[in-house]
Length: 340
Image 1 (tube, rainbow, N blue to C red):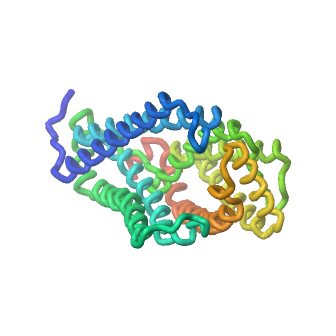
Image 2 (cartoon, rainbow, N blue to C red):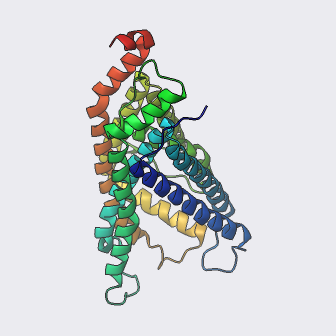
Image 3 (cartoon, helix red, strand yellow):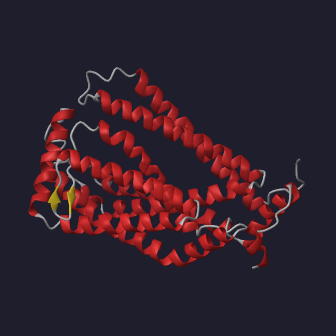
């Protein structure tokens, strides 16, 4: 049964932007996938190993499927489907998250420029910074716009009115706090590690509270963590307290472990050895992939990563009472929720 409600101009504009972004992403990924399939991958300065090529092809296909879902989300917004509003809120949160992470890298660009890099023309570094600011800043602005717009009471009423016309609502279901929902979907992507990690030609060095784990044990740690984050994400979306506790526990464990491991003098040596192995596997010249230069960049990345991990943990702790309240309301059932 159709409904007579029409999307407002602001919702329609957001839907058009979401649809265009998804379509452009789908076209770009399709071209990249086609180029990888038809390219000989031989004779260049870098030969892509078969395992990496397979992983890249799988990643392209997954991202294309996500882009297709983005197109349906835009259409759903035009038709005032509430699932589309929730979807665009999640996408907005992810845009803000990754845009907020990427923006500082534009300002820290000189820190990541290898000393052996070719001399750039005057103004080229500034142009690169401006380009990065645009690439990360545009999704950040769009994400903030979506988060503000689709959290407005008037816009919520539009979608609620459409739902009422379509069949009526007896009671508002308890919902997970939006920032936690965004993080839950982010944690769900960790399941991809179960595919990509075993394809790595060299085992990633894993330190647990400063102690180097054997390669097989380290891989087991990473795979169990990836599955744990995935399971915790599902638990959060289903308003299960165990999922929230699992995610917080994993976050605290690896945050503390990484902080302690960075103090181990053997940590830097293990990462350097790993980079040399990767360089040899890719057959990269040392001038293009120097372990010393990478370690300089890696140090900044790890410091920034610890800050981000701390922020995520803070968000989880801050929203924990609201989540538990929603989980308790969901467990109580619709009869009790109607009386509240």
